[in-house]
Length: 143
Image (cartoon, rainbow, N blue to C red; front, side):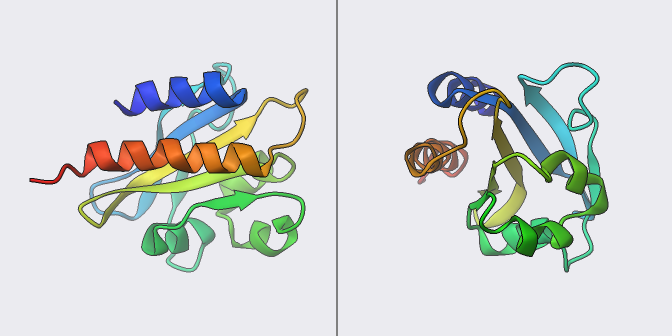
């Protein structure tokens, strides 16, 4: 289901790079598990990020809030990114959304537009969040 979400997001929003980062079993790191639109050599494909508790990704997993990382807030958030993610996210606008099952963090979804396309905008962020909400509902069925 998550793979279909990534493919749909890519097609609908013209996003060039989507990566599903999943928590390991002891929740100490995020690992890239599935990617769409990335060449085999892209560093995001094999990304493994240790979580320190003080980094941006740890905070997003706790707050369950999406983030639109762009030019207006990059200087604030970039130093809080795990070292391995700074280069990959340093210049591209990125949507980052936590995924959870029954309130427990599962991972993060990272989405970027292809370099040659215009910057991401508010309409894309709203649609990204709407599609992420559909994924959340599918992961958390009401019994």
